Length: 181
Image 1 (cartoon, rainbow, N blue to C red):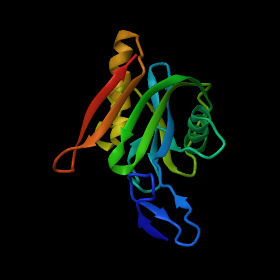
Image 2 (image 1 turned 60 degrees about the vertical axis):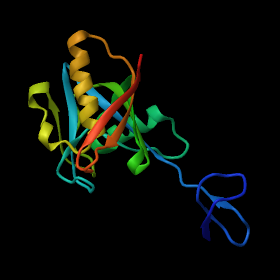
Image 3 (image 1 turned 180 degrees about the vertical axis):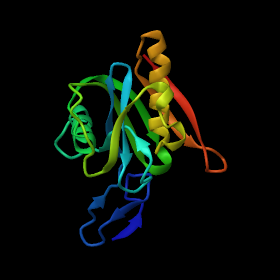
C-alpha cells in the first residue's frame, strides 16, 4: 500500500501497489435516539471510553445492512435496554474534525422497563432541570438536548442540520446551523 492521489481523484488515498485497488476511508455515521417519556429524556452514563462516566443519549455507529432508524433503535436497546418508537429525524450534526456524522431521532419510550446495557454504568430519566449539563459526553448530544428543550417550550420540533466546528484553541466548539425545517 502507498498513500497517493489516484488518477482522476483529488485526495490522498491508500492504494494497493500490486492491484491498484483504492481503499477509501469515509466518515462514520453515528445514529441515536432522544428517548422521551412524559417530558423527560433518557440518558446513559457511559461505561466505555471515550468519555467513560459521562452522560449521553443512546447512540453509536451504524452497522452494515441496517437503516439509520434501525441503528438508532438498536443502540437504544443495547445501551439502555429500552424499546422505542421512532418519531422522526431531529438533528444531523457534521463533525468534520473527527470524520463523523451524528443522526439523532426523536423517539418515545414504549414503557419504563429499561436498565443499563453493557456499555452503560446507569440509565435514568431527566427533566430539563435535572440534566447533568456539565457531565455530558459529547457536543452533539449537548446541542440536541438544548434544541429539544427549547423546541418543547414552543411545541414545534423542526429538523436541523448543523456543523460542530472546533474553536481556534481546540478546547471548545462552535455550532453553525445550515438549515431548519
